[in-house]
Length: 441
Image 1 (cartoon, rainbow, N blue to C red):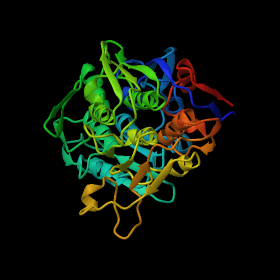
Image 2 (cartoon, rainbow, N blue to C red):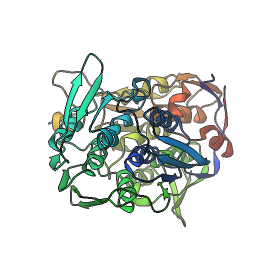
Image 3 (tube, one colour):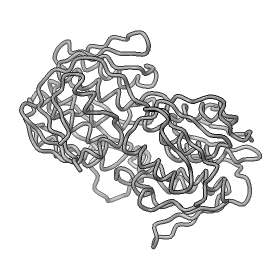
C-alpha cells in the first residue's frame, strides 16, 4: 500500500479551495447519531481515514452506516448489539471514548479501551473520567486489559466543573447528560465552534441544551429523532493549511466557506505578518502574497485563542518571514514532532525554555514538577528551504511537512501520509488543482 507523497516544490499556488466538512464535528455527530430513535443523515462528511475507521467501529458494535452520496452519510443505531469497543479500532482514534454515551444508553454498562489518535503527550483523561463519575456513572480502569468499564444505574444529574477545558470531555458529558431526568450543568467546558455545531445538531432533534456564560446546561430532553438532514460546518484546520500555504508560496488562493468568528485569532496573526487578505461574499477569503512576511509571536490557547492544531502550519509559514518568531505551545506536550523534520529542509528552529511563573496553571496538560518539557520554539525565518525526505509522526505535523515540501526547491518525499489523510480529504487533488506538483507513490 502506498503511503508516501512525491512533491516537487517551489511553485506559487493559485486558485480556489472548497473546504471539506470538519473532522472534529463529523466524528462526534456520527457517534451521537447512535443515541437517536430514528435514522440519521449527515451531510458534508469528509471521506478521511478517521471517518472510515470510525465507520468500521460503528459496524462492529451493530450500527448500520453507509455513504448515500459522496459526502452524505446515513447512520442507524437501532441494532446495537455489542457493549464492548473493539481494541483495534478503538485504539486508533481518540474519539472512541465518546462511545460511553450510546452504549450506556443502550446497555447500562460498557467497556471502552484507552483512546487512540495522535500521541501528543499527557492528555487529561482523568478529568473526563472524574466528570463522568460526578454525573453518577461508575467508572473503573483495568490496567491489564487497557479497558475502562462504565456502569450507570440512575439517570445522570448534578454538575461538573472542568479544572481546565477539555474538548472531548465536554462533548462526552453533553452526550451522557442527554439521559438526565433532571438537569446537568457542565462548567468551564471547551468553547470551540465544533462543540456549538454538535449542540445545534442535538437540539434540532429534540435535545434541550443551552449555553449560559461558561456553563452548558442540559435538561430532560425528548427522545432524539431527526426531522431533516444535518449539514456539518467546514474544517477550520483545513482552512488554515491552505491559507498559510497560499501566502508562503507567494500565491493567490480563495478559501471558503467559513465564518470569520471561528478563525478570528488566526486572521489577526496573518494580518500582523503582512499577508494579503480579502473577505469575499459567502464566507470566502482570498489569501495572497503582497510583500515580505513579517515575524510574529503566537501562544496557543482554547477558542477564541490561537488553536493548537494551527501552529504546525503556522511554523512552516514563519520560516518564510524576516526575523525571529516564537511559538509557545500551552495545550499539549510533544506537539513539535515536525521540528527535526523541518531542520532537514534547512529551517533554522531551536527550542528554548520560556519563563512561566505558574506552569501547572498555565499549561493545559498535566504538568509534572521536575519533568523536562519542550514547549516553545524560535524560528529564524528568511532562509529558503531545500528538498529532503521527511517522515510524518502525527496528523497536523503531517500537513505542515507536506506544505514545507511544497515551498522547498527540488524534489521531496514525504513518508507516512496515512497520518495526514486521517484529517484531510483529497489533499493531493486539491493541491494539484492549485498548481502544486504532488502525487501519491
